Length: 467
Image 1 (cartoon, rainbow, N blue to C red):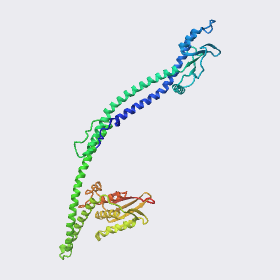
Image 2 (cartoon, rainbow, N blue to C red):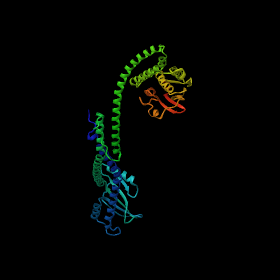
Image 3 (tube, rainbow, N blue to C red):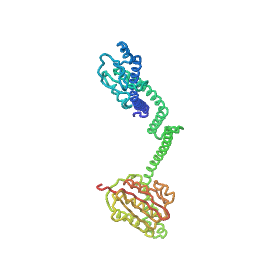
Image 4 (cartoon, rainbow, N blue to C red):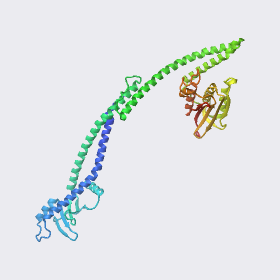
């Protein structure tokens, strides 16, 4: 069997979080890098404009002495430009340039635009594969009325931007690895190791759930991991208790089934003997025979219900569509005929004659028969049924005017062998009824119970059109 308690590192939670941390940090750095590179390009060009202005301060535009070609070359070399021009609002006062300046490929005015434009221009600059000649316009910090025009190559700018980007990338990688490493160690300590212990405990528990030694030891942590550990420990204890009870009940059920089978055969013999006693002329025998019949009937009924419960927990259904009124009337007559004449309750069938249901007629008859017998044995004077339906469901209420259920009976109403409302009962009638109703997709519930009587509500899903 594959060991799923320790996944490979590449498939583990820590590795995934490590990769996600690196990815998100790099993504954040990229979002920061875009405006940074745009700002870097702008500052680079502004510094070039400033250097051009400072380099031309040695040249006196009002002097009658002509600037030598050698000095112009030194000024242009200092700035790294092809040409420099100082422009005032009324005239151009100084121009320094090579003899044959190159053609201008693009013009940028540093006084216009925002960071979106700077980002765009920076991206365009880095995407170039060949040198471009740029004409840069900017203002002088020392003389705001002076416009400085510089003509320069783009290649040195692009190389400086590449170097800046490389430094940003290296720094981002270092930050991402350090952050991811610290987060990895923290996750290992706080989450992965505790979750690994929980997973190992679950795996061991799955292999042998009844082994008491394979129980997680809950920590005193107050976070979600601590809550999960404590809840897992509680769940393991409850599952073990349920498994032990299930094992005992399964063993007991098998034994009871065998005992009931033999007991039914014994009771069959007792029935034959009681029939012979009924023909006796002895007054005392005639007086005791009905009680003997009742005792044998109760014993047979108990055996039958127990065997049905053990062998038929999920009854197969043979669905058909039929009028509910007819079934209720038939079940009511069957219940009354099973009772002595002097103890038969009054019967009311308030089910609409046109109401139909889609169900197993025989199984639904068993449900109604069980509920009817329970009401009669509880001492009801009136027993009846009412129903209503809509497009989604059909509800059938079985009501009586008996003394109602005791609190103890209500607390264990649908528990086998525990929910009986009378002495000597098995408590299986309602359990079987609920199993049948749930097999239909519905349910049975106690609607009310008190001094005014008891009402059980049966719910069935309505058949869909064309279903």
